[in-house]
Length: 153
Image (cartoon, rainbow, N blue to C red; front, side, top):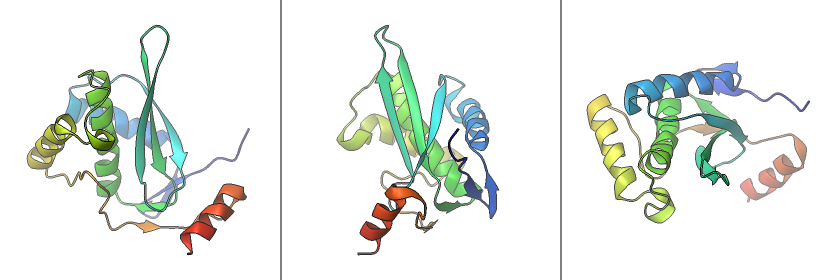
């Protein structure tokens, strides 16, 4: 089994299980529980904090995945806003059936939900990352070494 990575949330390390817990909570709170299952994976990035992608299986079922940066010092609010941002992409794709929604998925369907959530719940969901998050440079593995070289330029 590979190395177990963690997420730094409010100064404490936590595993991927927090993402599943928050996903279930936010799905009920903000999307009426309409989102299906989602798998999570770790991102190592200096600029991308979250990423939604999906695969349509032969039977037509959509398999959703959300990547979250593990080298960011998250707060409850920033993690919520980024995770819900990715969940909006999932909602537009899986519930509304829109596999293309403008440039990088931030078209009118995405923006409609972003505005609704920001207004109703006081969130700070944005189209592009403009968050002031502290990003730690990855140190381990070849990818980390390549990333540090590119990041330090």
